[in-house]
Every structure is written in C-alpha cells, then in structure tokens.
Image 1 (cartoon, rainbow, N blue to C red):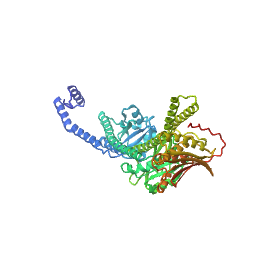
Image 2 (cartoon, one colour):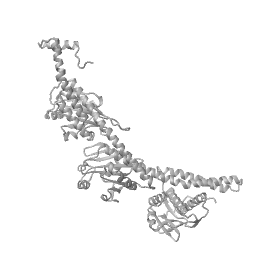
Image 3 (cartoon, rainbow, N blue to C red):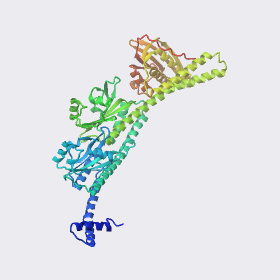
Image 4 (spheres, rainbow, N blue to C red):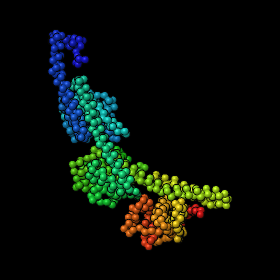
Length: 618
C-alpha cells in the first residue's frame, strides 16, 4: 500500500483550483510538486510529530501526576505554536473542574476551579467531543470579564480536547478531564490536522499517566503486602494486643518501606469530648498521654465531618482522610498549631480516621517534613490501607478474645448435657426431675451466654444492677463443672464466704467474663499434684471485692507484669481490659504457697432488685 497516494480525482481538483488562480500546471508538474512536498515538508513534519510524541512518552513516571501534565502542556504549546495550555481534571466531590497542570504555570489560574454548567470545559467533559473557539471575543460561554482577561493576555482563540485517565483500581473510576489549548490568532481557522494532532497528544497523556499508575500500583501493592505481613506476623506472636501496642509493634517495622517520618495514634475518649495521644513514632518526639479537646477544628473535622468534601485551596477533605497541604493558611488549624508545625518544619499533615460501625474510635496522624512537601495520592492510599489493616487486626484480636471466652460456657453445656443424659439412662426420671430441670436451665443459660458473647463483636451491652457475690458463685459452680470435665479430682474447691448482697452496676457479661478468666487461670495454675481453689467476696470501703485464690505462687519479678495483663495466655489481658472499663482495679498477692487475685469494682448503694441466679445442680 502506497502512503499519501493522490488519486486522479484529487489531482484534477487541485489543477482546477490552480487554474482559477491563473497558475497553469501540467498533471506531471503537479505530481512532481506533490512528491517534493511529501519528501521534504510532510516527512519533516511527521518526523517532528513523532519526536514530540516520543518526548511525551519518555516523561519519567517518577514525577508526580501534576508535573507530568505540566510537561505535556509545555509540549503541546511548543509543537502547535500556542500561547498556553491547561489540563483540567474533574473532581466528583466538588463537582467542578480543577487545573492539574498548565504551561506557562500560573499560580492564580491553577487554583481556579470551574463549574460543569455553562462552561466549555464542562461541555467537552459531558459530550466527549472537541470544542473549537475561533474567536473568544464572540464565544457566548465566556463572560465579558473572562474575555477581557484573555485579551489582556494576548489570547484570542482556543481548542478544547477531552482526556481520560485510567484508575486501575477495582473500586475507582477513570479520571476525566479536558486539555485546553490557547492561541493568539483572532478568527483562527482550526484545521483538521491541528485537531487530530491535539487529540493524539491527549491520548498520549492517558498513556503516560497509565504507565505511572501501573508502576505506582505495583509499588503500592508491594507495600500493602509488607504491611499485611507485619501486622499479622505481630498478631501471631502476641496475644491480647491493644491498638497502641499494635501501632508500636508495626509502625517501626514498616516505617522505612512507607517512608514514614513522623506519625501518631490518637484514641477518642468515652465521653467523645476529648482525644488522647496513645502512641507516636519516633516515640521521643511525642508527648504520650496528652489530652486534646474535640473542639479543635481539625479534630472535629476528623471525628464528625459531614462534608462538603473535595480539594480546597489549603486542604483535601474526604470521608476517609483529611490532607492539610498548606498548614500556614488552613482554616482547620489554630494559630498555636500553625506555629508549632512551622517550628517543626512540617509542610503537610495527613489525618486518617479509624472507624468501628461508622464511628471514629481512633485516628492516625502523619507529618511530612524537610524536603517532603505533601503526600501523593499513592502515599495517601497506602496510609489509609494501613489504617484499615490495623482496625482489621484489632477486630480479629477482639474475635480471638470472644473465642477464648467461649471455652468455659461450652464446657459447661457439654458437662451438664452429659449429666442429663446419665440421669435419663439411669431410668429414675421422676426422682431426679428437679436436678434435670436445673441442669437444663444451666444449659439454656450458657447457650444464651455464648450467643451474647458473639454479639459483643458488634455491641457492648447495657449496664444493670448486679450482685457481685451471686455472679461469683454462679461462675464458680460453672468452673467446678469445667474442673470435673478435665478430671482434676485432686483440686479442692471451696466457697469461703460471700457477702450478700454485694451490689454493683455493670454489664453482666463483662463481669462473668472476668470471673471465668480468673477461675480458669486459677484452675490451670494449680500443680498436677493438686491443691485448693477458693473464692470469697466482701465490701471494702467504696469497693465490692471478689477474691479468687489458688495453690501456687507467681515469682515476685513477674507479679507486676501479670497485673498489667501480660501473663501467659489471653485471659489476663481480657480481664484487665474489662475491669478497667467497669471502673475497677485488680490486686495481686502471692505468698505462702497461695496466689490471690482481687477484683475491686465500685460498690453501688442503689436498692434495686437484682435478678436471681439459677441454682447449680450437684
């Protein structure tokens, strides 16, 4: 196939046009001229076009998307002999088009966002068609102010081309925008060639950005895999990890691959009026334990923001993050905080809320210092992924806690079910009916308790009036069944004294879990040779006290660690956390061959009726 072939009909048309201009050429002369144009002018022009396209394709994907688009704008201007070019990207949150790259770079215009309605860029975005403006002064979509502004810049015509940038995300959508090219000519006659070249450049933009996003995606996925590995590696080696512990375990391990300079973890206090700085990296650069009010504008925005969302002059605000990229002018920061950030040479701050059931329980803060001016979209994606994985890890930890506490009621159900079966096999059903009914009642209660344990993954349960002595006795009897199931006949169980009533207020499931874990630990701590397991309860000043004692001692050097919930197994950690939430304390005494754990919960003087505990059959 011969390229640029001029057929006979076109040759005759050209000859006729030349004759009208009194230029008489033979067919052979015209063919010779066309060949010279093809060899000289056209080949040179195609060479320049290919070179310019290659220059665009060679733009380094290591540059930011804004820098890439700025280089593309420059190439378009230089090749087409234009005055300026801008690339506008559609922001679905603001529902406006923002300038994402321009040449020459104009700070004033770069910050300008325009609507989709009654604008050329909006028309191009919706129609996906080119838009030609031969004379801006006659274009109805330009305001008189804008027309004058363009004239003052020496710009009189414009060509707008649609562009599309692939997201390469399962959840994301392609980014759409407009390439606008400005010329100085008035009443410009846009040729088909100019339009096609501009469209070609626009498609090359998509290619360059796609290549960058693919490389970024590979890097992001690699980092995500590292984050996932570190979080669940740490969880696999520890039991009962809290969020701040998980933060302290994971962040130092991923700091290098994520290029984290400074970050912090805040937790929202129960009153939701304050937040507390739980952990920081590097730790020595943070005032751990510092309490801040939710009334701080940036904290209120992280916890309670309902929009509007989008990219604003000094910050980006979205449901899953807030990025303050111009702290000096941000409306979300107080003057004192702006001054602090300036002294620390912090150029931008990223806040990531960590939510449970759409309520923010924690938030992460990342700082960009020194030569790092702001966080890229890829970095933000990685940091939000880290936050989600931390919450996922914490949720799995909570699930493990619940599964751990399934054990005692499950053993009780199994034991009492076997006992009922034995009563039935013995044949004296009527004589043992009361014991059978009591056993079935316990089975029903413990099965319901297993269900309630499962529901604690989603809700905490309500606070009620309780008798601590009755709860302790009931769980002691259930644990007695567990000891029997484990065939530990050499364990002597004894109730030494219970003060009745011993009123408290709290969630019954929490109190039962505390008793179950301590009784279970005490049973397991008794030597194989046997020993005693005793319980008692009493009032001490403003406290209701439950004591669980067992044969065996804890070494003096380990006692403080046990009080902090860091003993072997998950039970002590669960106990410590639940006691703290009930406003109580744990005391430990280990001497003379015995260990005693004391649970102190606030005594309640309210004379409210307390539900009776079902009797335990023997």
